[in-house]
Amino acid sequence: MASTYSGNLAIELIGTGDQAGTWGNTTNTNLGTTLEQAIVGSANVTFTTGTNSAITITQSNAFQAARSLRLNLVGTLAGTQYLYIPAISKQYIINNGLTQSVIVSNGSNAAATGTAITVIAGNSTIVYNDGTNISQAVTPPASTGVTTGKAIAMAMIFGF
Image 1 (cartoon, rainbow, N blue to C red):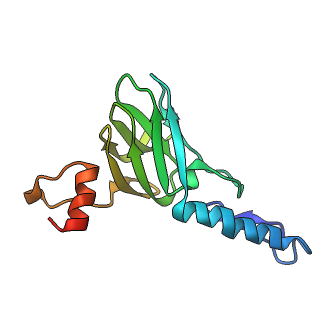
Image 2 (cartoon, rainbow, N blue to C red):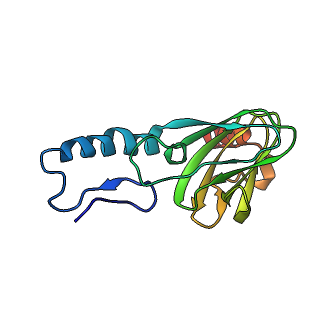
């Protein structure tokens, strides 16, 4: 049975009896690179003025931005653009280091799918992708007036 890859994080699943004498290399890559990247990894996603950005996940246990926990948005924007992420079940911390808002959605550079969220310029937020829709993982109570990612984090830490 040949190796396959898991559906969400593309972790190599060694087939029974495969990779005799070398399976340890694959296992070490799965644990030390693939899973570690998904749990604590950070990747830059570069934007160019006038161009949306899309990250994908492929059947490989090599480094992939889409597998990282934290996505650091960098580059230049002239207006609001899209960040398209793979339609998989995955949590992301998105740090928008750009001067414009970014809309985070499933889909491709051709079209957004499902519910999207907007990350305001200079803010960070935690989002959850259920494979169809993107939702903000933390929503502050309306009574606090807290609306930005940084303020949400402060509200979580200090309880206001």
